[in-house]
Amino acid sequence: MTFLEKIRCLFTFGQGVALPMPELDEETTPLALFEKWFNDANKAGILLPESMSISTCGHDGQPKSRMVLLKAYDEQGFVFYTNYGSDKHQQLSENSKIAILFHWGVLQRQVRIEGTIEHTSKEQSEQYFHSRDRGSQIGAWASHQSHVMTDNNELKNRVQHFTEKFKGQEIPLPEFWGGIRVVPTYFEFWQGRASRLHDRLCFDVTQTPNQVFKRHP
Ligand SMILES: Cc1cc2nc3c(=O)[nH]c(=O)nc-3n(C[C@H](O)[C@H](O)[C@H](O)COP(=O)(O)O)c2cc1C
Image 1: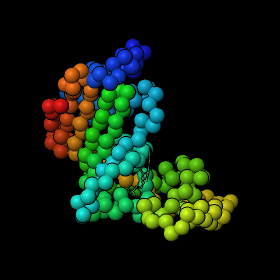
Image 2: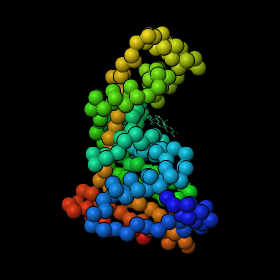
Image 3: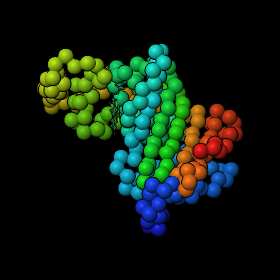
């Protein structure tokens, strides 16, 4: 993002005019466009541009959303890490469909991605798990993510327990923890514009070649 573009973003914040939509040529893939926008968000100094909302919906039909961190993305999909005993994972095991949402407010941009999930390989989860600081590795062991606490000290006691258990040794990857890869079926790039005449550029990636279209804002 150039200095001029940053200034323009600041001046136009709240008015719905930020940056131009990129010219698309036949080579433009949604992944390349995502990479460009993600880099712009990084360069704009946005705190945690990799944070994204994920929405899931299990058998009961109740959608649930929460934030996670995007840790990797490529042609295979978009990866985050979590506890496989969590609520979100339970919902995903009942219904593998998922929706991701990024919002980069200062750039007046959102990206929506829909898809289905698969698990990362144990090797990939292990590699990421061991790249985390020791405290986060203990935290993964200690947290019964999403489960109701039996008492206020439960988490603290479990942290203490696993800190002692793994003292002086490498902490293994818990069986119940790892990566989830979202394999996209649909992308939408939203750019704020004046008078709420926003741009919505969409890609249906289930079609070959990808179907590209715009939606009314
Ligand atoms: C900015 C942010 C990033 C987060 N990143 C993660 C993450 O990468 N993985 C994760 O399991 N939870 C993450 N959380 C916590 C989740 O939002 C959520 O509380 C937790 O995963 C339990 O969700 P569930 O009970 O619906 O499964 C994050 C929360 C915030 C606010």
